[in-house]
Image (cartoon, rainbow, N blue to C red; front, side):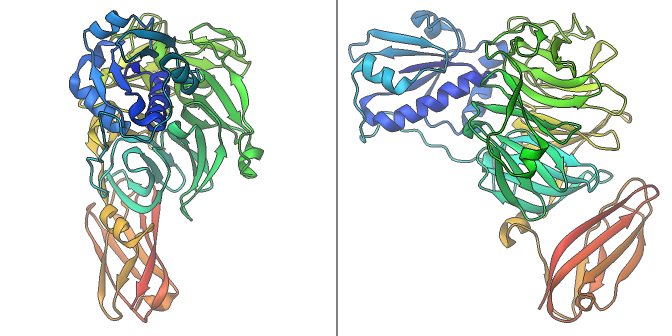
Length: 510
């Protein structure tokens, strides 16, 4: 089985997952080879393909075909496609697309029977990143009320929860939700909850940042990508595999109902035709966000930014196509993008676009597209906006978060604190110590200082006395004296010139 695919194509990933299942089912009776024949120039780089294979945890061998020689030899007709080759090396059939029942087709075209014998090429995936680091973060979202950040740590199959201190570009980890298979985009759902997509499982999951639980609220999708909360509390999901947008009502979310989604845009045919939402054709829609003009979404495979208006029509803001891409600024109808994958609204009314294959951020404002002067990204996946107007980017290929201040025009890599302690102690980091000893603590530093820092505990007896001090520099520490033995909660609150933030941690005094 030759599976022709290309990076930057969600339908290709759907095909690859089916090919992996075929290899597991038929064992040594067949051999699946994933032939990477790039549709775009960005896919010719070998490093990019190796990174994609690792990011996808791919378990079948890959042939890199940068000059399309193998693609031309077999002429599958497009992407993605599967070609059946019999044991005499003759083409026995081909299927274009990823919708077929390949299991039945293997039996028909190749006469193969399921087997438990090992395939000729044995491929295993090993995570290259340590557990106390991020691995291909695929989504990032922030709760503006609490400054709680949720990160889809895709390479480690988990969602990481923390509290962000923008002044110090530091994220203090407060919890880890494990067992969320290769999470994708993530969005704030209010009330300490976040909603995250699981593209490989076709699932949408609600995670609670307080009790660190995960509850499915959507199932049966093909490859869900972007997600956002609408003004009415409903959840909008972009299914890149189905080329459609769906809505999960606020009532369904509250009831934790599974699979009560309603189609709101997309005919199901791949393309880029505008008009009434039900008849419009989309092309692997990914990131979505709510704006005053409607639901804006990144139509990744057509290289366009589009909007689903509140009157039920789909309108293309830019004017690209799958074969027209690049890095060109100017009027939206003439500007060029290369696989936009996420969008977020900024306080000034502009739309910030994650232009993945250009490894840049673009701004859409007043009908003009411009490039933000930040470079050094590697396959950025997602973005969200803080209430300060700063941008938080999931720089997936570099396994990091980047904090960007568009006003001051600076960018800083976010330092992640307490990940190692969180991993060793459990889901939430616990402050521990012996009675009568000192405990050294960090603190959030909201906005400009100096900061008035207050530390208290419940029950109060866990500390000798509450602490109130003034600190002038981010990164300093405060020291409290531990009181009588017991378990409870430690609260560290910082009040700056304009803002106040708190961190709550479990406390154990021995």
